[in-house]
Image (cartoon, rainbow, N blue to C red; front, side, top):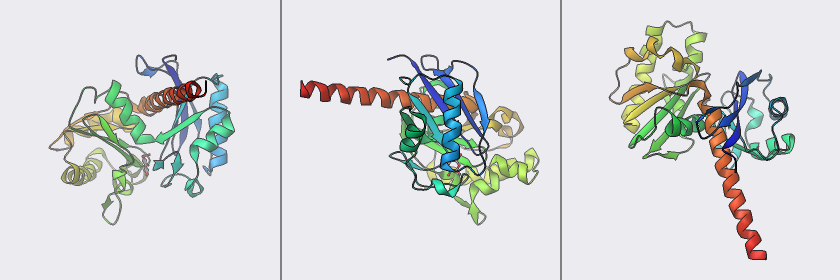
Length: 264
Ligand code: BGC
């Protein structure tokens, strides 16, 4: 099986995709971004995902991994904080596979970013508890213990000042409320105090688009754990989704091989 797969990152404002070189852990070509349709209903988003795959002429054999900003259990979306509510209960794997004609594998966006950072980025070879926190429209989290992921932790929804923490201190709150870096860092400090109190990570990795401006706010934070920016920046989701899709394709191929052997 080739060391390539296709990754797609479905976000609240943009849907981005690119082929991924999985030996090197980076995009094989520039990514393409299409604005997320509004309302972001399952059918409209599936159409955009199809457009991306067509634009890259992705061959049907290439595994396709997709990130989604929600709790994903066995391919089904269980929540929808920053996308159309009609996603709740949708079998995302089935919908996207049917609409695109590719075998699509879906995963929570922060979990995908975390998987990529652990293999190729700031979490490489790190044991203990590593927590990736993505700061974007919402706050996504991925928690690893000795390199093993506990999926769907959703620590961006911890309550803070009477609402989900992400409403108070995601990057979108900085934009919406026009917060300066210091003021935003003050809010993040409250969030990380709570996160550390509850989960005691050894390392915190900050992802999301704003991770590239880390000098503006990371030095203002005081955490017990080491805190560093993601190395793969905003591409981590695409890379992680591709990694997981390839793993899943391998697993399926093995199962099919076993079944064939049994029969013949
Ligand atoms: C969602 C998470 C997602 C995060 C980042 C939150 O609102 O509940 O599933 O990982 O946003 O997109």
